[in-house]
Image (cartoon, rainbow, N blue to C red; front, top):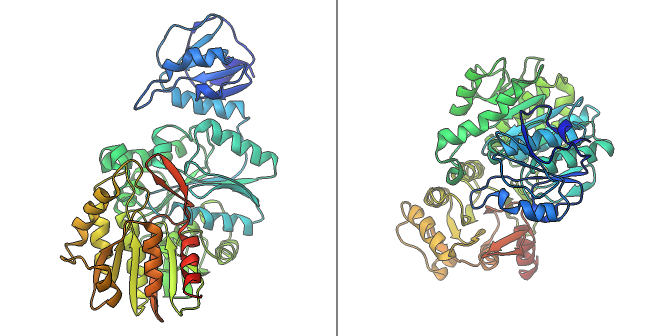
Length: 501
């Protein structure tokens, strides 16, 4: 493809060499540039991509895209644009042949529930005879082909390339989780969404967005994109206050939730340890819903997925079958089988709202006692640490504070901030011996996550429930600058074997 053909949707000004070369690739990392490529000199928080232009040219870049004119090596064409990231997204869509054109594409955004809702929509599309590609927090996949997921939503050049590959391999639909970072950074510009789903908005990533208004504005961008795409529809959970606001700002949304004015709502439902049953009212008729997922918050996720199915024009029968066929979601209240007559669950809950929903759901099931193992990540929003501590203390008979992904922070300092919240419920911390005795309700701290999980499993008896929260599907732990293999599910099974289970 010729250079200038990449920018049909973007206003630009040329500088440097006067040429329109044939382009072989798109690159945002100068170390990855190949001969004949375009280098996008992206502005960053710590450094500016224009610093690496010479390196990109030395590796064969024929053109550079930047937000300001700058000196270029001889023979390199410059493209000046208002937003390098936006230009890169539209160029990627053009270069890879607009792989989302002509197929149903669903984007799911919100603080919590994105992964679960994406899996559920995948099930619905399968029941309707489609072969959907899915891109999200856990992995990027098509059928049995799985790719690692370094980001919930890939960078735009990677996103369009992956979708193009999946289309060639038979994908005829796509479901993707769309993060607030991705929206703020224009990664999904150029994607032809048919449906956008909003799950909820609770405090998260405020270290990046600044405040809740900035966070909302980023999520809102998905629905601004929808407004430019004829025939697309928004699906919005109006049990959430931000959802109510969003539903008032967009045209013709499919609303969902427990709220009586929602277009998709449960007429009646039952929740148990075996799953969820509900009769759901929809604009297309009543739907008999059955799912193995647990809890009221997952019923809310199911309603969002039903709304997406309705927005896609699918029948209640197809939607119901697709939802029933989804057995579980990796790392989302994922069951670990055991012979202790206990219930062991692993969940990705790493925000106050997610932990609150998970523990309230489990408390409503009335186990003999609840043991919760959890921590908070380093180099992330510090404000949620005491909040999560207080929530764990409120719902757990025993809360065990441990490390999550401390990253560059001192794990002890993170735990100190979590303790400040849990002490609002339990002023005095138990020793490990007191935790073993377990008279009353309390908390203890075991910084080593493997040790904490092993200790929790050693305490389990019939009727107990153990929730290991925070990492869910992740199979690594980041300590300092090192990424180490660590999977909560493997550690639980290791501890069960140590007990002879």
